[in-house]
Length: 283
Image (tube, rainbow, N blue to C red):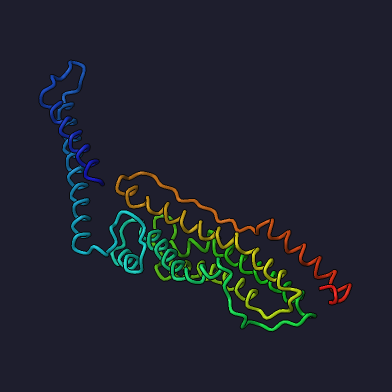
């Protein structure tokens, strides 16, 4: 509870005390009205004091360990994530999961930046003219399999095994494994595009390979946005639990290919087919 909220609760409780002591009891009010107000006021004062003490306790922990988890949001670093697991505050399962998603994705930032730049070295598979179309078809099948595996990892029964049934604690090893598997699909998508771009292919197919690799741009960005949104939602967990407020986290991840990129692939396939039909002297 923030100190300001605690002060409001204490003031409310004190106000009820004053009403119980100063205000004359109306003839229609029960005899125990004063006692009821006094008890409620006392409970509010205690609640406020405990809330303020907790807030200053968090502040003291931050001063003693400024690089540690502050306790009012999802963790952002490996160290903060480990602290959440060690302390296991209420809602730790989601905080821990968000921390692993964040740190695991951030560890791949260099690969993502290379993907943005289309930076590769031509050291991949060597592809001959007759094998290019089949190679791309297999690549498209592979990327669909990657996306399908991520969808399977988000099934409710998979998540329940990690986070535990309602009212029961989660399994930290399963939570970590699930977050790492989500991230591995993200890594696989980046690696898939890199493999296409780094392949040593005939010049007639370079634009087609690039067009196919571009189709994964949107799913990669959708996953990155999903992680940011999920972490932002989990940031609300500590405060909501302290205030005993209901909080529901229900975020869907939809991976969809870019329509413009898919149209470009179709155009490149048609161009390549025309080249095959007419001979490579048309290049």
